[in-house]
Amino acid sequence: MSTSERIRLAVFASGGGSNFEAIAGAVARGALPLDLALCLSNRPDAGVLERAVHHGVPTAVLSPSDHPNPDTYVQALLDVLAAHRVNFIALAGYMRLVPAPVVQAFRHRILNIHPALLPAFGGKGMYGRRVHEAVLAYGVRWTGATVHLVDEQYDTGPIVLQEPVPVRQDDTPETLAARVLQVEHRLYPLALKLFAEGRVSVEGRRVLIRG
Ligand code: GAR
Image (cartoon, rainbow, N blue to C red; front, side, top):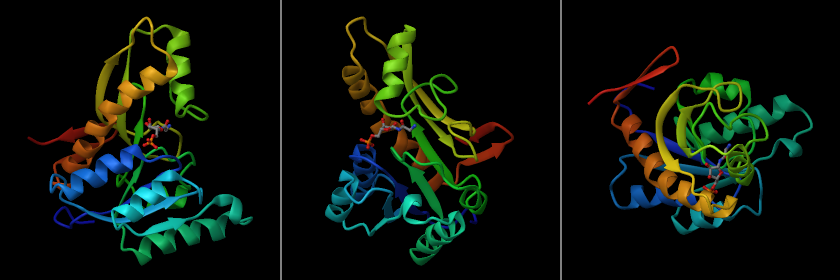
């Protein structure tokens, strides 16, 4: 993708899709200069699909469990992305590992949002409520949200933006999740805007932002 090419974004999500809503809202307000090309879920009952229909965004459902052969799954994924001329992907509560050939085809063009300050409280199995339970069990004073580039493993790619959120003594996983989500809804559209404006470059593990 050349730096001047307009982003055609696919959002991958498995759940309710409040981050999708934040991104779609920013696009609709004219605050995020990109085209929402596709919303893809691995679950036909994911709430995010209804939100996508509401915003007039094309949807697709594709699950590795429908493809006994991993190669046909990867090809189906690449085909649907090509059919919608997708050149950038945002994972928003997507509970599947992106297959390595897709990561390679979209190197430095896949973002993920994680509801903690990576590299703490990340990795396989660390998603959604489990992250906030682990944060509370450990007793850290601060958690937060991280937007990072996706590589071949869970939650290990270069970090683009982070914002801390204080942990309160009376927090439950639900209250903490709600406060972190408020930050996520601001941070994710901002990170995407930086890419849409061509202000991001990657040097090894470090992400450089101009301006
Ligand atoms: C968000 O908190 C997101 O950070 C998290 O799932 C939630 C999805 O909420 N993602 C992960 O835990 C990934 N490891 P949403 O469906 O309302 O956007």
